[in-house]
Length: 148
Figure 1 (cartoon, rainbow, N blue to C red):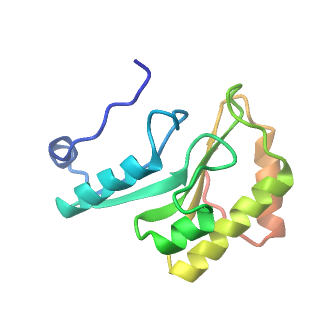
Figure 2: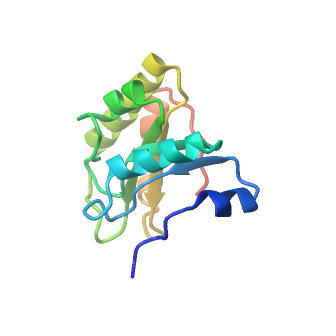
């Protein structure tokens, strides 16, 4: 009942969408990165540009190869990582964990030639995380695209 419906090629095309990025949400038990990757490959074979984020709303991120960096470098469809903050069911990583995730993603992007993304799902009540991320990005000289 709480699962997002699977996307189908015909519905995507009817909507005029040509590029997709799939991601896992909270459910990393009955859904997996493996099935998400296979779905992205199938949509790409059908003519769409289809990519995925490794990870999910959980922390530390679940991955296909053992690390976010390896996923980005070794799997062409992986263009970033997703994580969640602020919901009662989400983990609460420390600042060092966040710094390491951002650095690992940046390193993977550099090695793969991709513009890899750290996609952070923030609950409406998680505004205390915004200055933490701004501080990390500033100290690591990482450009930020954001919408709060």
